Length: 322
Image (cartoon, rainbow, N blue to C red):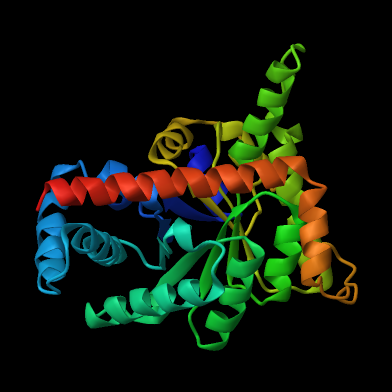
């Protein structure tokens, strides 16, 4: 009998949520996605040592101070890692814009264009790359402009229906709703209120419900934006979302699914009835909807802080390697 992973591939495209080149080679995903946290972990792997050396050598040629050299090297390292990953997949690699630019539309656009330029210099065409951008209002507007320039985007740190709506209305190529982090927030709320920690059946988790809501909205209204659920805490969440356009999965959960047996049925179905697109969200409405969603507001801010901290840690690692 086919494994659960093999059955899952019949309903959804599988993406590797890792910067580990060996894991990508092993599981043969369609795409691979990275972020500062994953790159920081990957930088400790032996296979990354030559990439770090090459990135530092390139940055040193710019003859700037140590901090700027490290920042430039971090940008090039992300691209070099993406190039290595692209050799091992059929589809696209996602590379993240510095989270410190999350509230600056122009800086995000400039960094995205630099990343694409560097990829093209390394022989990887832009149709093999997705630029990852935080799903702030400013990030979504940057993606709107980049998509018009044929630079396709992966809108990340997405926790709310408002973010998903705005991304689709900006014609973003792909969104990454974070299933597990939504669950984390709800569990933390139970603990902070000294209540019994609510246990969730994976199929009924709030993050799973959010992805289902987004998927139904996109398909019912004819939006082409790809739904790629991300940030899983257990394999049950993944199986509950069989049928999502894509699923980005960590190596540990890929291994678990690869070893699991059973019968898997498609869970997300395309609605038969098509409806006209609703009026687009404006900035004022978007910000109000986010304000009313405590979970999304908290997790977006926290995600930006965490990615920023790991970006800074990666740059410090590179400073120490100078």
